[in-house]
Image (cartoon, rainbow, N blue to C red):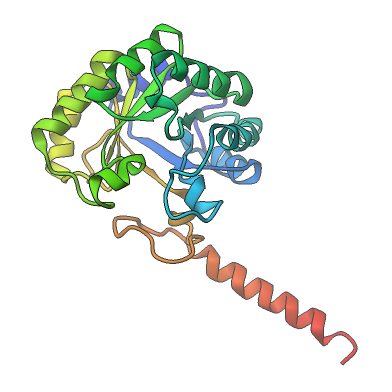
Length: 258
């Protein structure tokens, strides 16, 4: 059973690194899923811009809008009682200048009950991170594979530039980020970055040495249609269970009166 009855705070999240307590993070996009994840004891719930792909059916995270992120995050926020709630800044809100970013992030905090935002970027986003933090908005950074830059990166590929990734992580920490997502980078490099920065690292496709892990909840529950990333461990196959249940229901309905 969960050992915490109140909502996790940003300082408590940061303190888990020094305490050696691993951090479990999952995504949610609506009230019922968020309520289930929160009650089961997940430490952080991320309203990811992956809702563009998982919920809306797009082929990338780029189409989702700020209003749509706020709409889904507000539903999630109503369900969360324990977990730290973080919301992605959708493309291109953090690329329009620091003060436009503050306006967008301010809307997210005011309208969704979240405690922090996440933005993709390291060195290139240091000014934005610093401005948001100065405005009192906690920021989680995201380096490595950046899905919002998928066209520039040439696809969803492992990122291996050690010097760049180390510099990005250090720049994000230096600008005030309270945590850093490391996506699709070699495990040994993720281990090195984790040892280098003082804030928690959250891995996705980055090996076991990060301070925590994040997965898309639909992927790990077997609800995603089509392929899922090869690093995903599926803990259930709820898609198959739903298929079985719906087929059984349809059979029962159609059998009435036969």
